[in-house]
Image 1 (cartoon, rainbow, N blue to C red):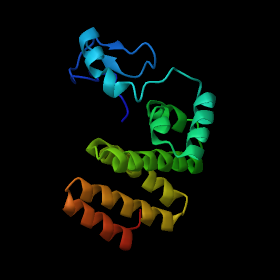
Image 2: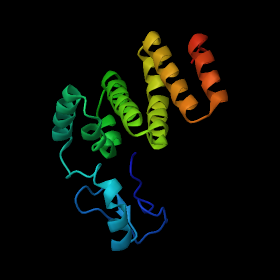
Image 3: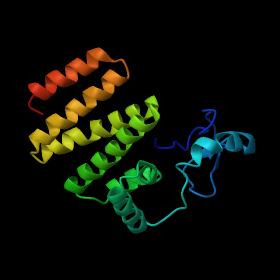
Length: 170
């Protein structure tokens, strides 16, 4: 659930007068009321700003512990991390965050985790093709289809399974 800095993280209002969370600098709010109202949800993802090296170290530790909350705290830094990684590591990182959203979905049942996992898989699937990891690409497409089913988007799920079975040339 990557925070957008062009709209309030609580009410969704767009504007130029938004203020960023002073701790993580990722979430933005209209004002103190929205920040206070949104804190219960935001505190799970709020973490002090760390260097990319420190983030990667924390992710390695979280990976060993299989703690999806610790992983998703750093999702706001995903694009920044991806910009300096080779393709193989990029796809592994996307898989890691997608897996964390899957665990969060199983734990909380919140649909936004399925939506986030879908978005990550959409970015990961072309990388798997580029790396010629076709089996993993098919598995990722099936994972994507499972998320579509969870969201009651059955037609898209069926299409995703079909493409996994008979992939087109990309």
